[in-house]
Image (cartoon, rainbow, N blue to C red; front, top):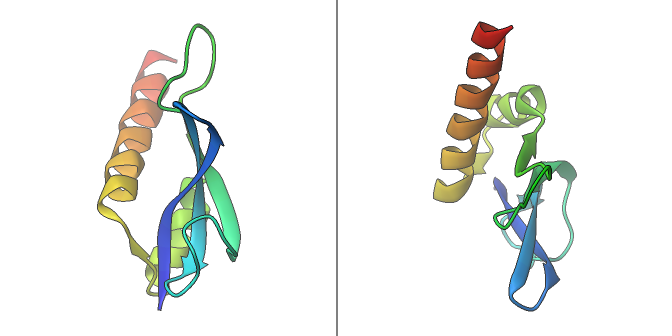
Amino acid sequence: MVTIRLSRGGSKKNPFYQIVVADIRAKRDGRYIERLGFFNPLARGGEVELRIDRQRAQYWVERGAQPTDRVKQLLKQAAREESATAVAA
């Protein structure tokens, strides 16, 4: 089975996560199939907090990939931000 999940990077007390498509048997920070974006929970100033390729995420979900609960929240957040910028423009 394939899952869409977070892979942790960054340093101690300064997390940075890659949003990846991976086999469920792979280690958290191990081998993955495709990188879809990133999540920086400690973004400061002009740094980007979240970037996801939503089209590729949708592609994987249509083919049976199961997003984790946190990734589901991030996909919803990305959709809200995208719609807010579309309305503002």
